[in-house]
Length: 396
Figure: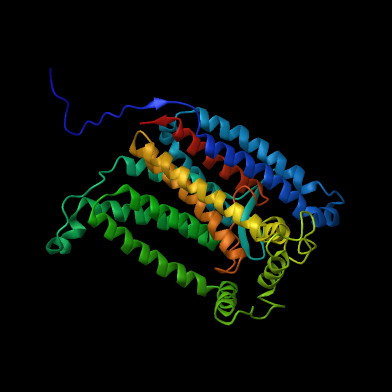
């Protein structure tokens, strides 16, 4: 009998049901999201549409449609879906280019355009697609690049790893460039950090780790430059720094107005909150309908207090722990990278949103998965959960 080649790797796996912790987490968060979106949007729905259920009904429609699409993704083997990652990425890149040309101009930003009655935000769809693409591409690359020696560092540009790192930097740099042109710094941060995390996890040796850290530093410097380049971003940063170093919000009636109102709501909530449905900040004090979008966590803290916010935080920590366990038990590198990427993306986005809503970072407009109102955000969140549950079906 001929022996198997050394590079052949056989992985025994069993197929079961979806991970129950992730499934229950997604169901409960979706239900809680509908309740809080209705609660936080009552004033704006009545004031603008004379229908207190206006935003609730739209969110429910998006959620049902998302569950249908997510179920289809869950039922198809993730290894077959990975073969569609390149065409999917090309389509999303086309949409990102289209929105820059034909997108609706809202306060100088072109992030959305309409397909008939359906609003589309292409940058949101880039999140699961780029994770699927990177997982598929990196799974085919060698995880190591040989023994690292400092004496050979000068020859690093001649190695296969250097080519892989350069290819990764070009791909990510290109798509992030399209997103930042909208401009959308928050989404750029999410996609950039998640992509770097996936790349870091895909390698096992010192050279890979050092290369990833160096590339992270380059992207970090570019992010700082982008943050101070636009005046409105720079004002958000200075407002945040003022709050951190002085304990007071700078210009609370101008650039610091949103943060000031958020902190008033959180301070009113205290430990146990003012009670469900008793928020005052939802009555137009939070600008641009953010009471049920980007600032909904502040409404939760106002109504349910520190205890309610702590429950949300612990739920996301449980999600992170469970998602990484799914990645470790995945039967192949593709499943490991895909599950890791989805878990890191959703958790990172949730933590950054909550951090911004309690004054631990500048406001960036990052949505809170499951809880923030919005069709594109809801759809891609459910798609991410579907991918994670898909991988969880197959275990070593």
